[in-house]
Length: 352
Image (cartoon, rainbow, N blue to C red; front, side, top):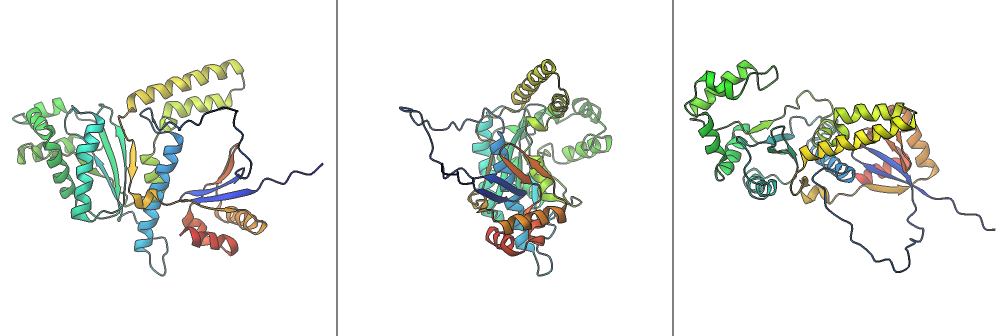
């Protein structure tokens, strides 16, 4: 009897780590006789799938790495680019009265067209989410500096075509400060404190309530690992919900089969609740072709690369995630490039 050949192993390098998995691509695919090919469904159900989350995180990683390459020096190949990345949030200053799809096609698209035309923005990633009040808001990443006032003026001008600035003005114009804080109560969190409300009211009266603060720029100045922070922030899913995490821990630690069954049911209910709150019409995220066109570097493992990977894990203290399908080394390409040697170094150069 002929011995079966060992299944070859491959590695795949992406911005935030390395996946090691068995390659079954050489095996003949078996299909049932008479089975018709069905095109895979592209419907999202309004929430971010695990596959979409991975692709979104990779696009963020590619944007960060390309920005690092742009500003690197002979001494520093991976500079901290926190100040070079624009992490912008676009919101609505009044109650949403158009569909999510309409706002993305008419407002967001126009905003991106103007960024390309007037600010030379060539690479970007955006992610749509729902606020607690049900309004759509957009997280947008660009690697070109744009003044905050210019961003707000442009976004408000686009929104004004569809009545959102006028709606905001109608709500607050002529109100006393006491009436203003009754509409927007003071809270003990950034942007809602008393000093924030005073500043917001003063700006509103000075501009005749025609310049709502509908944009925000996240300060990444003190963020050590901007790439991981941003990718985690924009790719949140139901699995990142605090209630889901708590129930998942209870499920993992409970050996009783009956309890596990109830916990699984509760997890599904939390997922449905999250999906209902976050459900978005149309695209959930998008990136420029310069980012979506990049593919992960793959290669077959040999003994030399395996030895180098083991040494890299020990040197970097990388966390290993083991699943039924792969082993994932949780360290990015920047750390790998600092260590890489031999065959592994050739792969890193190929990836770059």
